[in-house]
Image (cartoon, rainbow, N blue to C red):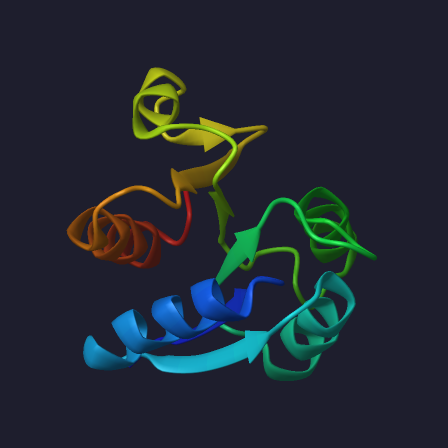
Length: 125
């Protein structure tokens, strides 16, 4: 099964997403900040990264930029997780912001799994 890295500074959110993905049979890595998330991505080359947008130290945008700049991680698909925008706003953006997939943290669990499977099956394109 696919290996997914979850990067979120909110411990409850991190645990929730980890539980959801484990229940679907995914292999899961977690990091509670952007710096550690970037390090884990480089060391483990996950199949997909769920990346919180707003984090201290290194936010999701900076992590994403660093991932793209590294030859080892530049092709790893990323789905941004955010509580800043609603499901409706995500749909209005056709599920992408700055070329990266995005999902609202308020989205139903089934939608998250659907988006993950969609991204994994298309390689993030």
